[in-house]
Length: 186
Image: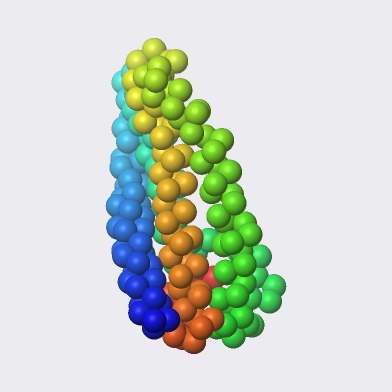
């Protein structure tokens, strides 16, 4: 019974990991778009004396989508910020325990707090079909604000995957929960 439950949990964690990786890799390509659009804005402004408010806002949207959409991917790859005083010297079970504790005490409550506090903020923006306050700006401010919910949803899902993987390590089913190449990010 325990083996089947663990196998199901790890299958779910693997599915979440694949979705997180797909989202992270997809939004990472927006950095190229941001560079190209920034070059276009500079060329239009200084070369042709043309303002490009909508393009500047599009860069802002892409920038926020990169950070909010890839946060769970960074967590999954262990590329997130960690105050690493003792962690790197711990064995796999110790690392799993630290990550499990962090997920349960900090990550999940933070995600739930964000979800609770931003739901009305985003909902009101959708209700009003909020638009840019700048002339020539984009009419999709409500979509931009919705990226916060993407952050919350993706981090909550990745937290579940991390918890399942760390429990598998602590029960001895799995040797480690971090990616094999996580050292390259330190």
